[in-house]
Length: 303
Image (cartoon, rainbow, N blue to C red; front, side, top):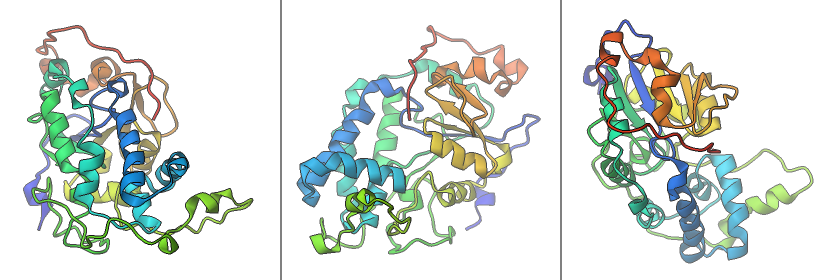
């Protein structure tokens, strides 16, 4: 399938053709509490579904996230096998979505931007669609690149061929096996590994494709037919920002006004976009933007 036919590039005098947005803690603030709840759900899943000792969950979450990008990717790498839909249902399905509210200011701002706009998230499709719907942003984006997009169910191993990958997948995603756990002897002891005086860098590989892997970001660019040099990438994660920068993307770190290496812009809140990057609006369009309420400014957020 030729994605260049599905997503033709628009002609702009602007520097950019597309704005690529992360979802969680980017399009809504960290103060919503969803990230904290998600972390607790991850720990509960490990204990209840995978048989991990409760005292090990903090270290395991930290090590898997740091070394594999997501806890899911790390769990698969070290030997756990489980149903992806059930995992996402457990971890995301019980989040306090009631903490999120419609954001007409952000909606108005997004709709005023004369560019292609896409969401690129490590999360599953159900969570992404539900979150965008609650925020009132579901029709602000051309599409969503999510967990299912980069990890199609009909593949038992990762492939570099994106010809059969769907853009905004509409089918459920379940891994080929039905086992919810693996025997203790099959699990790589990553906590013990890093407890050694001089741990080696030889860690088991994960079959999951996700940010901050440069391969994941490049694959997303290929799927949506994006030129990285004409794409502006919005993220709350410093390491995702830096990975994108290495691929040629211009980058916006959301959640802090302090720029870091790899970030071209830094925003306390996505609502500050008009002040931080005013050139995104063409002069005739910018003058027509009307804000119906005071722009919110969030406190500093750490990735």
